[in-house]
Structures are given as structure tokens and as C-alpha cells.
Length: 269
Ligand SMILES: [Zn+2]
Image (cartoon, rainbow, N blue to C red; front, side):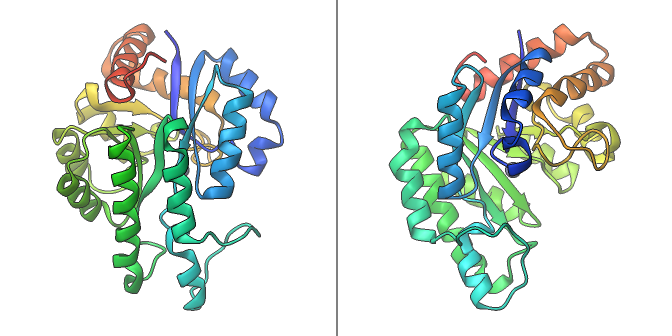
């Protein structure tokens, strides 16, 4: 049995610069599967290339980050948004990229709704793009990895309306009560590597049905120690924390997580 990181950004420049070390450290920590999530066509292509270099360990998720989905319009409106000096994605081309490559994807993600960065004038447009991506995933029978911020209820409404069942919510930031509703609806939740210093993720580990829990790092963000660059190897630390909270041993945690992974992704890590 191994560990798996269902939401990582290995193509982030800081991690990509030391790719083989990051992957070696993950292997040494017992990580057997890392789902690297793409943000836009350029990043999706990097994810595909990386997965081809390390097919035993890295599985590709292709998506369109909810801010990138409407970034061109945000910038045209004069909204301030900090990002790398890279081309601004074209929404239609970005959706088409996912449609063209969905068969090679392990999952579709990250996709979703973001009402934190995106102004209200663009919410409908963002949702229309999200719905197209959910449809592409469902038609190809691929699991979906959700990013949402300040739009959790609306995201759930869209997914339930469309009948999406194979869904993992990454780094859920709203009320634990809503997380429980989402788990009761049959979706999964991945808990990030900063769980030990987060009251909300600690509570989620305690109260969510254990069969609906997965682990992620969201690396390079959200490390176990503040300000430290996060890596997939840190999954082992969250698993150790889950073992404490669940009053079981690490093998018990591994067995539970492996079974959950199989239920959502329909394959053994
Ligand atoms: Zn992410």
C-alpha cells in the first residue's frame, strides 16, 4: 500500500526546477501516485509531458483554473490580478484543449467556480465554461477535481443539477456543515498538507465519513509548515495526523485511503 496525492502542481516553476529530486523524495516517503493538475492549455501540456516522463508515479489531470477561464475579460475590465508572465488563455481554445485530450486524462481538473477573485459581472460566463468542462468529463466518464472559492454552494448546485457523481473537492474552504452535505451527496473531499495547523481541516478529518476522504498537498502551496515549499512527500505527514485523529495505525489509514481512491478513480494506486 502506498500514499497518493490527488492534487499537486508539479509543473509549478519552483517544483519543476527540481523535478527529479521532488519525485525521488515522494517515492522515498512511500507516495505511489501523484495527480498533477493543469491550470490552462500551456500548463496542461506541461502536465502531459511530465506524466510521460514519470508514468509510474505521475497521473495527468487536465483542466482550466476558474480564474484563467475568465482572465481575459477580467484584465479587459481592469481588474488587478497577479500572475506569471505567460499568455492569457483563450476560454474557447482552453475548453477545446481539454475536449481534445480528455481520453489521455486521469481526471479533469482543476475546474470550478471562483467568486473570490472574479467580479460578479463574469460569474455567469465562468459558470457556462465550468458546465462545458463538467460535460466533457462526464461524457468521457472521467472523475472531476474541483477548485472553488466563495462559490461552494453554487458549485454544488451545478454539479447536482448536471448529475456529476465522480467528484473530488480540493482544499474545501467553506463551512464544515456544507462539506458534510457534499459528502452525503456522494462526493469526495481531499484534505491538504496543512491540516494539522487548520481547525477546519482537522474538523473535516474528524466528522466527514472516512470513506469520502482523500489526501492532497496542493503543492507547492499549503505546506505543513508555514512558508515552507510543499511537496508530495508531505502526504505521509497528513496520513500520520489522520491516524492520530482516527485512533488507528498508519496501515489502517492507508487501507481506508486506498479503498477511497479506488472508489473514485476506479483503479489501484
Ligand atoms: Zn490547485
